[in-house]
Image (tube, rainbow, N blue to C red; front, side, top):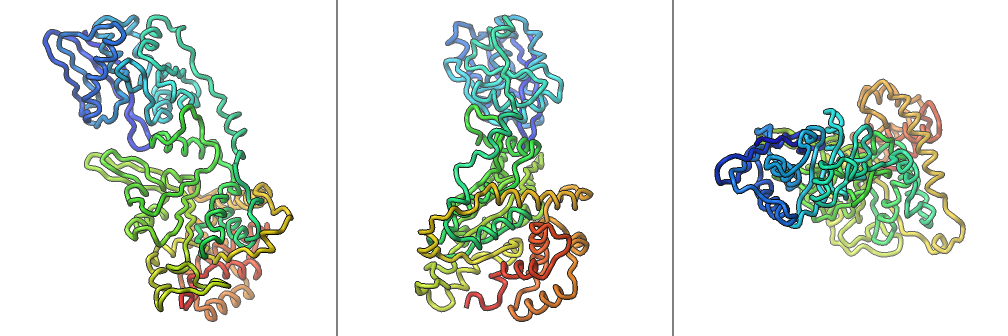
Length: 513
């Protein structure tokens, strides 16, 4: 007897519906066809044990399982449950098999019939709704994640017996109900840290405010203990809140990567990813034999923080250059090309030299001649060219640490950032994909970053006296446009330009001695 069930395969951040055809006929062999990987081939062993453990019988005849379309590689163990249901249906042990046409079924089986979590539940649910399925049967741990999709009945199951009982009696399971909007908006500002916790460092707080307002990449340079990491971790608290569309995009990526916590739903706060400096280029940008999103995709719509930037392998840093420009990662394989979104803000920190005390106001640098420049050269010029702001972080004085006055909170800073972003959204509304000053091209920069004569003279003198490089020119204009937006100014004034100029520390000739 031939029975068809439906599952789903995740490719990139999208899902493709897979038809699981099970035929039980005369003979004595079990086989799975349709380009399965080893995990899928092993499915029959797990399925057989799960079926027998629950007092059903595995057919002792010929069983062929076909996963169609056959030219798409099937990976992972999530096809266990639909294969088991198909075998039970084809051997006439399952009631109402005609209802299999109405559901997408996914789940990994334990040997006792328990159902384990899977990856990619959210894109699977979105695709099931798009193709008009009535519902989705999925592991209980993934039910809330898939339940965010409306107009689709999502049933969370913990055991094979629950699925069998469901096809006997549809009332045996209740669909999961998730109030996505309420949960999303309630959790948007639930941060465990705040800028008011930081004593002193008002200059660096201002830099991070500008970075957040214009989506600019930033580099903090300073000695150990100056507070670089502490400040960086608080950057998401002043960024504009995620929109529902951005939250859905971000959640899909984390779902595919298996990074969502159990029983979680929509990601409501901007991600903050901080990979260790020993990470590989594949771990950073994504890839592998079964392509998975890397750290830069997991930081989509959020912040990628690279602590101790020169300690990363140069090859690892160089692979970021193209994704930073295109805001996506394209991974090519023999039969497919996958695109993972990667629109992130880069925030990096570094010591100024190997010992960490170059330009320190109190401690002397112990590095030999040339060591500072050699240390800085570990970060390539093209990568520095993509960082709009680089500033020096100095240690906090005792008087600032001992000050009882409350520092400005993240909420009040965020209000100014959101107001500036709203101005930019209105300004660039006719240009799809551009929503912040950091993303504008040369044509838009010439249109919206015009300087009067006073500003032109100021910029010319700054470039001559500070020996600023040519690559600093565009960055200064973009940053000054953001500073003007924070000031709600239509034009760039001299004070806006002067502030932007000081945020180009590494472009000054002779900075490293």
